[in-house]
Image 1 (cartoon, rainbow, N blue to C red):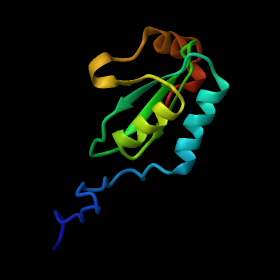
Image 2: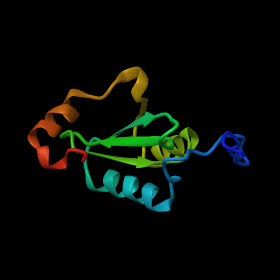
Image 3: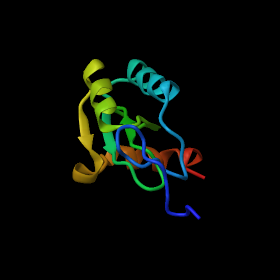
Length: 111
């Protein structure tokens, strides 16, 4: 029947079923965020069965965006290109300023 037969990608990883791949628009959104804000840091979120690898870009005031990057390597290249620090969210957690910004802007909560 093929229920458990998902085709692998050329790089050997299995594609996620519930999400789309990261694309140029995602990378452009991260680059625009870095260019238009001060003190931006990237927090890498690993790929899961539901989502592709993502990066949360957090500005000095706590404003943030999350976009797909496709792989940790792409995220690292983007961070290096824009001279932005890259942290692993699973190891470091998110900064308090992000939570404070979320409390101050409830209209931006995920729906």
